[in-house]
Each structure stands twice: as C-alpha cells, then as structure tokens.
Amino acid sequence: KNEVEQSPQNLTAQEGEFITINCSYSVGISALHWLQQHPGGGIVSLFMLSSGKKKHGRLIATINIQEKHSSLHITASHPRDSAVYICAVRSLETSGSRLTFGEGTQLTVNP
Amino acid sequence: DGGITQSPKYLFRKEGQNVTLSCEQNLNHDAMYWYRQDPGQGLRLIYYSQIVNDFQKGDIAEGYSVSREKKESFPLTVTSAQKNPTAFYLCASSTPGQPYEQYFGPGTRLTVT
Image (cartoon, rainbow over all chains, first blue to last red; front, side):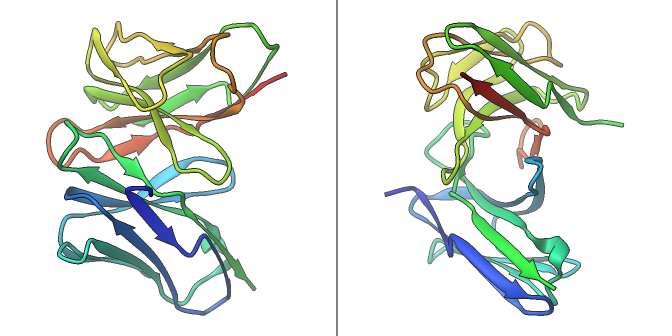
C-alpha cells in the first residue's frame, strides 16, 4: 500500500462545477503539499499545509492531521484547471526535505 | 528571474549509451533532487543532495549517478545499467530549513530505443 493515496484517479467535470480531490496518508507528517502538473510536464506548488485550511483564488486546501486526510477544492471550475493534481507529504520518519508523492489525479474540465 | 532550468526538454538515445541530464538553479537553494515519473505512477526519488559535494540515494538509484560540485548544478547521468530509462525526469530544489518548499524544473523527457 502506498504511503500516499489519492482519489479519484481521474475526474471529469463540467465548467462551473465544484471539484474535490482527496488525499490520505499513512505516516506522521510535518507538511503536506498540493502540486499542479500541466500537460507539458512542469509542476507548480499550489499549497503547503501543516494544519487547517488555505485559500488562493478559487482553490482551497484543507488538512485534518488526526484523520491523516487532506482535500483540494476548486470552486467554479474552468477548462484551464485541467491538469494533474498531486499530493505529497514530508514524513516525520525521513530526514530533511524529502517528499513522498501520490499518483496524482487527472482532472479534465469540459466547457 | 529565478528558477530551475533543465535541458534539453526532449532527449533521444540509443540503448547502451550513457546520457547526462542537466539541472541548474539560481535560487540559492542548498538541497536539490532528481525524480522520475512514469505513466500512472507518482514521482519517485532517484537521488538528492542536501549540500555541495554530498548526495544520497533515493528510492530508485540503481542505474543512475549524480554529482554536486557546485551549488547551482546537479546533473544526473542515466547509465546503460538502467533497465528502463525511458521516462520523464524532473529536477527540484528546496528552500533551506523549514518549511522546505520545493520548486520544480520543467522536466526532460528521455526516450531510449
């Protein structure tokens, strides 16, 4: 079993829909990252969380440390949100800044 | 304009040849990383370096080698011993100390035939 599990693997939505992507992890962590990968392959960091909730524009990320679970929400989705969304954690058991990654969620938003 | 550059974006090689992928950063980050990405799988760590002249194996280091002679540069060599070298390779660096935020390069897609 992977240390980081994401669901769903694939998600198709209509423009304007509210989207939720989930991430569950099995280890103690010091931080959780949400990343976005566009078709060209480049990755950008969306959020880094260690507790609570963060919001940036139409994106919201939440984390529940006790339940070892995080969600990424996209409000009023748009075709330009189509990308792979990746959850990654920094485990308390590994040294320094190493991350462990989920397999990613492929999101397609249709106009 | 700070960031991480990887070159080239696409690389083609014949089986049995070693190939070196370039990664340069001007973010003044101490730590750098190489990841491999295969379809349907999460990023896997090949090698990482916390400081110049030091590096550690990641989870899938077999068939790869690295060097870290300068803070800005962390080249990855894919050797002929790597059984399945065709993949997308991503380089990253992270801020010194907490919260260790990682910044990623644009990636190099390597095809070996």
